[in-house]
Image 1 (cartoon, helix red, strand yellow):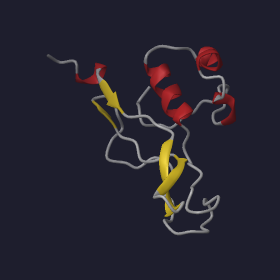
Image 2 (tube, one colour):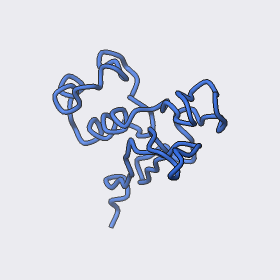
Image 3 (spheres, helix red, strand yellow):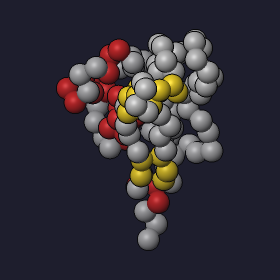
Length: 115
């Protein structure tokens, strides 16, 4: 059909699991790996920093709960820009985007789409 550059499939979640138990199983934590695919995607790459999977590492907040290096807001912002949302409108649909992305900058939020 020739629409491969117009279709993108992705996952998005801020849910994760801790490395250690809360004595009833693993506990809730932040982040996790996400995937994205489509013809417009700069693929075959890992975006963000993959954490060292051990307790008390630099991104561990305790009990194996890691701070994500890439926000789901950044993922949504990049997709929104691809869909035609202007950078100046991003804070309307993503109120926390300024914590992760400079809308006045020239770079894409993450860089996985050739916008």
